Amino acid sequence: MKVKFFAQIREITGTESLEMVVPADATIEGVRQALMAKGSTWHEALSANVLCACNQTLCDGTRAVSDQDEVAFFPPVTGG
Amino acid sequence: MFARVSEADFSQQALYDELCAHSLASQSGAVVTFTGRVRDYNAEGAIDGIELEYYPGMTESALQQLLEQATARFELTNAGIVHRVGRLPNQAQIVWVGTCAAHRQDAFNGASYIMDMLKQSVPIWKKEWAGDTANWVAAKGTDSEAAMRWLTEDKDD
Image (cartoon, rainbow over all chains, first blue to last red; front, side, top):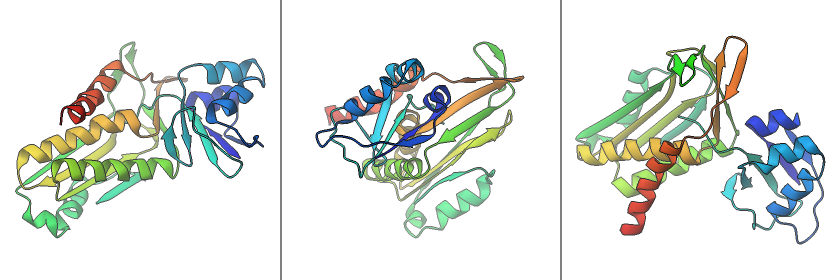
């Protein structure tokens, strides 16, 4: 699956996007946990208040995801 | 209805004309427009402009969805929104919202709803520059409360 990162999360991890393979029963929360296990900067970036989207729609961590999905993690929004 | 993300500046007159050119808008007795601009200060002191990041694709569709929700809820006859991204100096225009309705209260409420919900649900992030230092703006509790006001009214309906 494609995973995208924005704002502080993009800056802290130094990563705009990455590709990863997920198990058949994967959820967004599982993806977040797997990314946090990559190291201390990933843990720092994704342990705070993080919103997530699947296929460009906001969702919560229980959402089931597959390798065909585009997932994104980002901080609370501050536009306007 | 139009929802756009743009690096370029916009003309309020051109957007107003576009909004009112819509056929249903000709039945509108009320048009409300709002323009958000860059302040030259924050809680810590003076700033030197802002920078806005967005999620290409999702941001545009979230803005479009917001217009559709506002149109249904307040019986708007047309609605438009333009949000700028990239680096913007102090006083620059950031966002424009326009709503048309038969009567003014729906037009005011529609514009207010769009701005409140935008600050809560549309993927755009703001960074403030002061000299060579940039800091991400933290989400404000007052913005959540403003959005919650509309969501609470939903429940009461």
